[in-house]
Amino acid sequence: MSTFEQKIAELKQNGTYRILPINEGPCEAEIILNGHKVINLSSNNYLGFANHPRLKQAAIRAIEKYGVGAGAVRTIVGNMSVHETLDQVIARFKHEERALVFQSGFACNAGVIQAITEEGDLIISDELNHASIIDGVRLSKASRAVYKHSDMVDLERVLIEKRNAFNQVLIITDGVFSMDGDIANLPEIVKLAKKYHAMTYVDDAHGSGVLGHSGRGTVDHFGLHGQVDFIIGTLSKAIGVVGGYVCGTHASIEWLLHRGRPLLFSTAMMPAAAEAIIEAFKMLEETTEYTDRLWDNAKYFKKLLLEKGFDIGHSETPITPIMIGDEAKTMLFSKELLKRGVYVSGIVFPTVPKGKARVRCMVSALHTHEMLKRASEIMFITAKEMSIV
Image (tube, rainbow, N blue to C red; front, side, top):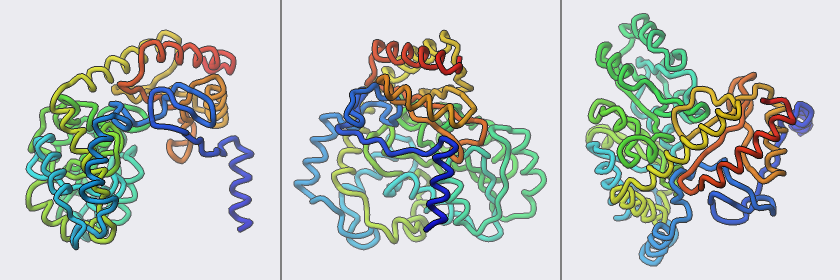
């Protein structure tokens, strides 16, 4: 164990050691964190659904009807009627042929990628794809290649060099990149996939509930329904609950029911979660007010940060990084902000490359303009003291 003690000591020495903060209540725009009330700028709860009364009531109804657990994997007796309904609700909302729910977004990527590729195939992945995609690729027996971030010239170079040497080729990208907030060039990726007879796979964890009409995602944002082979989403961010899903054709979903390992070897989603998620999609189908409020807040906050001289990178979404670079300074900035009433998490290696450290601000529909203005002022004063701006 001395090896791990030494590694922990190194983290402390270089300023990147962290202690898990404790949230003492629901995930809201303001929370009680470690005993103090702070403005929360670190949550993925984009639309404010995590503590919404309608979702809570739906979950309670499901507990009364189904109990607290599914009791088995979906392929045995854990496939309850509420799970089947949820699959159908997601497919309808996303305008796709069929959908299948997994226990988490991470489990979805880990289970789907290895099931749809095999030895003799090639996976081509954006260099900034999420860790769950990277791990999912590692679980596959397919060969792999990486293209420069959102660089379509480099993607085509890989396709030209390697396409003819493999059976199936799968191009994988995030829809919205979680650390920088930029959007994938999905139209060009689809165009190249058609040209070189490749399949496409989009992880829309940060696009679902954010982009497109009433949050239908990156595919809807670009009008590409029916042209992306696999669309992955999470149910724990904008939807506010837990779980992940994949949309695809009838045949591809049938295959995943037989080869998606998390479905085969892990108990199905809690029925209360499934019922709450169904309610969330009902709310999105009823109105665009939640996504409208989210984008209004995001644009307002970005404007405030830019006026104060912060470097917010190339963000095109509510994900708003403040680029700092130095890892120790980034973590210290985050700690100082917390002391002053703003919680925004520091992001350092290995989550981002060394030299690219930043704090990542996550704006939600729950924030008021007054909260965001107050947070930006605290951030500016602190950054000035630390020579960040």
